[in-house]
Length: 130
Image (cartoon, rainbow, N blue to C red; front, side, top):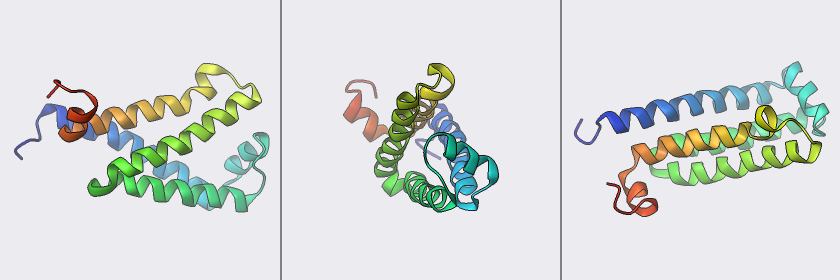
């Protein structure tokens, strides 16, 4: 377990929270459950087909984030997905802290977890921090 100290485990826990949320979100979209369809209708994404497509995209991006060799690519793709959600809520004039910034909260937790788990990423983004 060398290299897996408190920082790594904290990052793992942060990432696990994000991954569980994203799996739940993608699963609910893939199953096209009624609350997802209603929420999609309210933001201009009508129908089960749209929900399933979004769920499939999110699932693939999340799986890439989970796999260690592709976690950076997954984080970039999930960030894009979350950015689309933020833009949609801004366009609709939804409340800032509960709706608009929710994707930002998830993204910060996701990137924070990855930074704590990946010393090479820390060295690249935060020189002198390792």
